[in-house]
Image 1 (tube, rainbow, N blue to C red):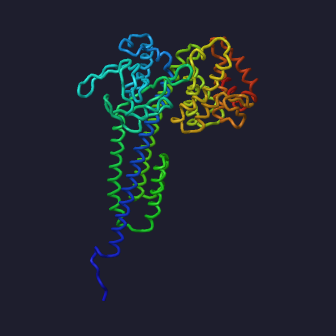
Image 2: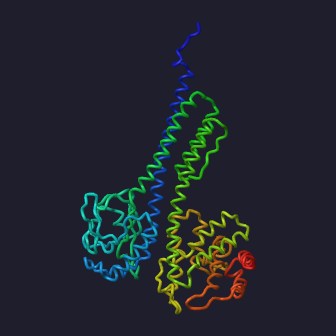
Image 3: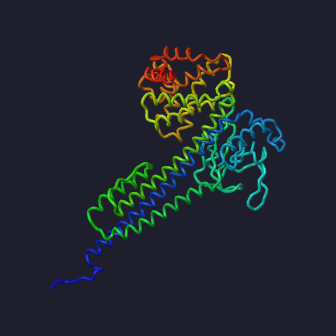
Amino acid sequence: MKKIFPLYLSFRAKVTVAFIFSLFFVTFLGNILIHRVSLEAQFQQLRQGLIVLTKTASLMIDGDTLMSVPLDRQGVDSEAYQAIAAVLRRIKETNPRILYIYTMTQTQKHGAWQFIVDINPVVKDKNNRVLTSYPGDPYDASRFPEMEKAFEAPSADKKLMVDEWGVTLSGYAPVRDKTGRAVAVLGIDISAKDVFDMERELNRRFLIVLAFGIVLSLLLGIWVSRQTTGPILKLREATQRIAAGDLGYKVDIKGHDEISQLGDSFNKMAGSLLESRRALRDYFYRIVESLVRGLEAKDSYTRGHSDRVADYSRAIALQMGFGVQEADMLKETAQLHDIGKLGIDERILNKVEKLTDEEWATIKQHPVTGEEILKPIFLEKKMLAVVRSHHERYDGKGYPDGLKEGQIDPWAQIVTAADAYDAMTSRRSYRDALSKETAIAELKKGSGTQFAPAVVEAFLKVLDR
């Protein structure tokens, strides 16, 4: 006699329930992992961007002027205080996310620091108590390990921190005097609201995807078949790729069922995270770009130089057969090719007389400095190569690495020629501008020695239009 089992004891029911539970478990854990990794990735991106901003901004502050501010209440009236405060205001005006920006220095006592310049020296806390940060006012830095490291290298808090001024995420960078010694620290605080908004959006996406995953798990439990194995493995691989930071990865699941919909939702979530990362990168790119424009604006001879070099570079790239998207990316990169000059004294940059050997060595370091500034922003090696290698020569006699011919990235070869041409046709403090014909003759003369022949050939066609 055939034994009849209740439906809930049948093998099919057990397998279905086990499958539903397993899929729900995988979906839940996968979403938890993605949520945590995404949250950490977004926070680290924000933190790295803050480090870049603080590091770049610190290069605009003269350490010797800063340390000449008297460390007492009357120090706010000093010429040095007003000069540094003006620089800090400009930085804050170009970066709306900044809540507080200030400078501090150490005392003989460990962890006991003093304010030097804070553009908001008097504020009230949430309890309406008055907080001051006049020159010489004390501050307990021992509570903030990343702040204490800032005399050695730029850093930022690894989590939201709380002090008398509220809940913030702060970046720190050393301010150096003319000898290169760190004499003070620049601090930049951004509001905790930016971090909370980021977390809130990620939590919302997580709950939507999780809810969709739960419903889908119940539906897919009915269809226990081999066809589900392949797509689940693809989703697992996609989860691992996203967790590893590959936000551009797309899972490919064919069909019109719930599994394919889950794949589409997964791709949309990954795409949204990628767009968020790009938006954050673009935000800090614009910050650095504004600093470059500020640098050029101080010198009427170089005003607009980066824009012209960028336009020339894009035109050359298109003439050489590069795609429009790649040419546009090269243009954006070329606009920042001289970012490293932020770390060079203006007196050296604008000097009319012949540079000393020491000054020339300082100038030759600006490509390396520029690369270090942009590393957290530019993930593409060829974008960093433009900044580091735009003074290399085709014959290997350039700097900073002495690369030659094929060792030099094609993008950098293009910017080298564009940079040289604009320099020749622009008026400088030590000479008048060369004519277009003279500059073209110099390009031809340098083909195969200073410049890549293919780049010169394409550039001449652009200039002949």
